[in-house]
Length: 117
Image 1 (cartoon, helix red, strand yellow):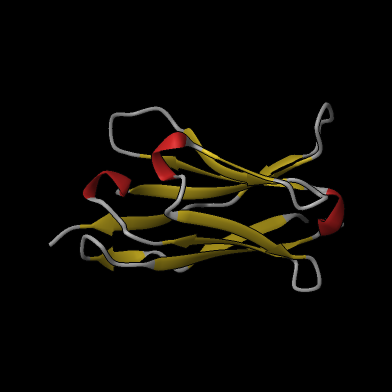
Image 2 (cartoon, rainbow, N blue to C red; image 1 turned 90 degrees about the horizontal axis):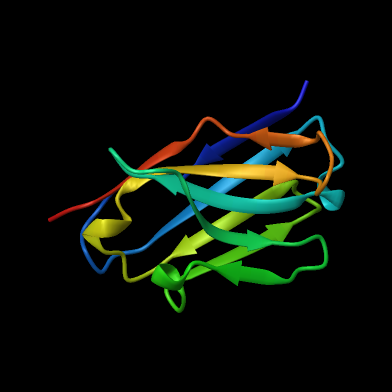
């Protein structure tokens, strides 16, 4: 059974930092591309950051320079370090593991991030 479990969300003040983690089980983690998405109330889910099996990364323009995605294949975990958080970063954050052009595409349950004073 495949499981992706996110953690690390919470309430933080503007300018603060959080680190999200997503730990996978039931898959060969190292062969999956990994992404973080977010969905704010009333908005579509959007891609925040991604990391390939080779470690190449990409980011949404809105988070470049503030967020960093990384992966630890030994721990089956992908991270999202979020710095200089803004109220507009408030959303439920989801991790996704996929193998491109295949049916192997899995989602976590999401973790709430709220940025507010």
